[in-house]
Structure formats: C-alpha cells, structure tokens
Amino acid sequence: MRKLLFVIMIMFLVSGSWAQLVKNVPARVMVYDGNLGGYQFSVYNNAIKQDVLCFSAPISDKFNLYCTIYDYMKIHKDKKSISQTSWFPFGLAYVPLRSKNFAIEGGSTLFLFGPHEKIYFEHGAKVVVSLLPISDSSEGSVLFLTLSGGYRQFSNDYSKKFSGAYAGLSLAFGGYITKTVPNKNKPKIDQQNLTWTQENSSLNNWSEYLSIYPDYINKIDLSEFSKMIANASLSDVTAFVAKYPKMGALVSEDDIFRMMSTEKWETCRLICEKQPKYLKYIPEQNKLAYIASSTKQQDLKLAAFMLLNDGTLNQLYSKSDLDPGMRMAIGFKKNAINLKTEILSNSWERISSAYYMIEPAGCGFPDLVEMCYALIRKGDTSRISDLKTMLTNQGNLMLANTYYNCGQKDLQDAALVWAKTKGFTLPIVGSLGTQVKWGLNK
Image (cartoon, rainbow, N blue to C red; front, side):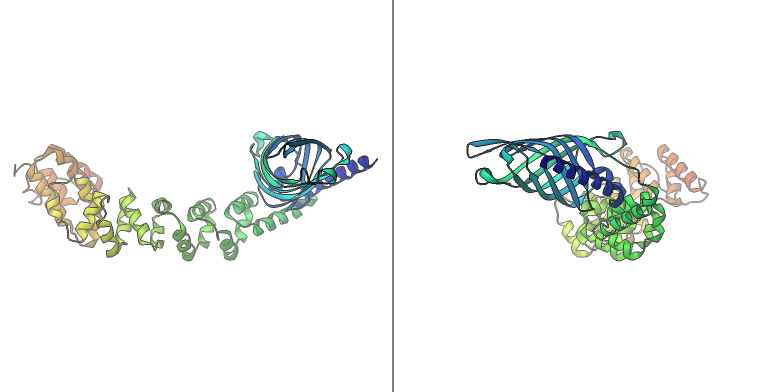
C-alpha cells in the first residue's frame, strides 16, 4: 500500500511539472527541459548503475524534478560489493545554467524500496550535454552524456561500508515531449521570455529572442544594449549589428575602444580588414605594428604604418625576421635607405609596397618617375612586369605617355590600357615623356 501511494504521488508531481513546463518556462528551452522514458547506463569510480524509464521536467526556471521507475546499482568498496535495486528513486536539482543542449545541475536523489527497505541518498553535481541536436531532424529523440560527481550516503547497515564520494559518467537515450502553448497563456509566455532574456542578457540570447519577436528591436534602448554587449567581443558585436543594422547606432566609441583593447592581435587584424574604420580605435602600438606587417591589404597596411610612433618603428627595424618590404619602408622613413638606389637591385613589388607606405611622409612622386626612367633606359625585360605594376598602382598621364613612346611594345600596350581605363587618349602631342628610350643605357 505504501508503494502504491508513493507511485501515485510521483505521477501527480510529474504531471504537475509538465503543466509548469508549458506555463512557466521560456518556450525556447521547453524541448530541452522535459524528457521522458528511455534507458541510462552509468559507470562510476566504484559502481555500475542502470536506470530504466527516467523522467525529468522543470518545476521552475532554476529547478528540475526527476524520477526513475527502476534503478539497479552494483557498488564495490574495500573488496566488498552489494547489488542495490530501487523502485521510483526521485530527486530535486538546482539548475543555475541551462540551454537547449547543455545544463549544469546540482541536487539530491532519494533511493528506497529496495531489498530489505534499504535507503540511500546521492548528493552531487552534474554537467549534462545533449549529443543529438534539438531540432526538427531529431524530433522526439534525446541522447545525453552526463558527467557527475558527489557523495553517496547509505542508511541502515550500509551507512559505513558503502557511503563515500563517487564520480563517473552516464549515457542516456530517451524521448521528449512538447506541447502547444494555449493562446490564453501566450502573453504570459511572451513576458517571461522577455524577462528571462533581460536577466540573462547576452548577444546570443538577444539574437534568439529577436528572431522570435523581431518588433522588439525598436524598443531596445542604450542602457539595455550596453548590458547586452558588456561581455561581448567586437567580432560578435559586428556580426550582431550586421544581422540587426538598427543596433549599429547604439555602438559608442567607448564600447569599441573597450572591445578592441581586449581582442587578440590576429582578431584585430581580421576585424580591421573587414571594417578599416576600427583601426583608429586600437591604442596599442604592438597591435598596430602587427597589422601593418601582416595584412595583405595595402590601404590598411598604410593606415596602420602611419599610426606607428618612432619608438615602435625603431623596435621593428631591429628585428631580424621583419618582412623585407616593411624593413625597407621604415628605412626610407628613417632616411637609412636611399630610395633611388634600391630600384636597380630589388623587385618592384617590394619597392612599390615600401614606397606606398612612406609616400604620405614626404617621398614625392617624381622620385618614382625617375626610377621608372632608369629601368626603361636599362632595358631589362625582366623588369617589365614591375614597370606595369608601377603604372597601374601609382601612374599618371606623363608616365603613361613615356611608356607609349619608349619603344617597348609591352609597355606601349600597358600605357594604352591604362589610358583607356582613365579616359585619356595616347599619344600626347609634344615632348612630354618622349625623351626616355628603352635600352638607351645598355
């Protein structure tokens, strides 16, 4: 009779918890929190346990009620062992962190109605991970991996022999139940979803909330947004703003400075390559130096280079593994390397890259024109590609006319292509750029 009353009590509590699942838990976590039936196999440091038909359901946002129809455990300790069979063990767990696929629990379970009315408790903590994604593709199925540990306390004859700490893992398979929220309960669910999102404010939670309630985006103010991004990275904020452009107006310069100061060097480079405007929010010279020396984007390389102070430039120049183009640019800026003498001994790609960085610092365009003239007069066909690159990247009408009139067919064709792109017509009548001939100084 006592067992029957206990079973009725458990069924009442479980059915009540399912009602709470519909009424009091945010809709997006309903699927995770309620699971029904199945089989669980557990291995501990001192025991092996099997559970059949396990029920779990929330009674509030932070508490879960659970019970098992049948539990069998064989425990070993000090070269002794017992087999313990229990019917309807039940417990209560506190759940400080939960999501669709992950939860942390702490609580106690009472085991009773075994042979000779043996009773014992398990007090411990669990980390629960869903191995099957909670999605339409796995409708009705749940596979959980649980890491657990705690203290097992037996009563009666076993209190001293087999009580003690335990730790292990479990694998459980079962199903879950979802219910349609009645229309009369929808306003309450909507409000609780908002309350839960505000209390657990993060970009991920807000992104999920706005996907369900897109109109709420117009109600988010600066205070709420600041709380939302308090622990977010700039890359996450950038992705969030890309998804919800209206939020971009709420991002302040102070927010960007704070986030950029905590980002890793490589992350800063990737962010600035997508959003160059963020470069000015990097106060650290070492990050700017990394971006200047590692990025392949010339405009970003120049912008970062121009923000480096003399101390940082001197430190970079002394490094043996510094990129040759960067070393040359610093040398030009420090007047340690003569720009005009480098053209005859270095590839134009390196010269052009280095020049591009120091041009705003005072190396005028005529210097490059003179270097191109020197190459044309030298008549080295291996440098034709370099000359084309110069015309494309930093050329003007005078240089194009020089190429056209120099007597080298490839350069003449390159000049015509450049002129057509810029809207000019070649040749230009007069002596502009006509005195420099291919191979004159061979």
